[in-house]
Amino acid sequence: MTETILESLLTCPVCGHAEMLTMPTDACQWFYECPKCRTLLKPKPGDCCVFCSYGSVPCPPIQQAKAIGKTGCCG
Image (cartoon, rainbow, N blue to C red; front, side, top):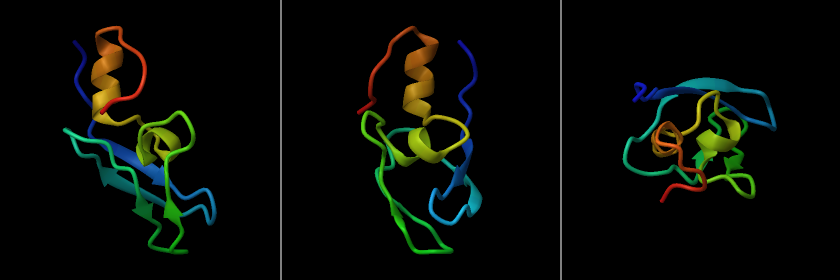
């Protein structure tokens, strides 16, 4: 099994602000407020969290699911 990556570069689709963040390991983060433009980010349809939608790395639960061959949302 591969090691889970815990850091993701989250980029705001509105203003382009990018920030390296540590992702939660046991849950999906559904909302994130951009510190620059104050836009409230929500997951795109079909994604489980803001990291899967706007991050450089998908959230840990999705990484772990893919490592064992599963697909779909975490939860």
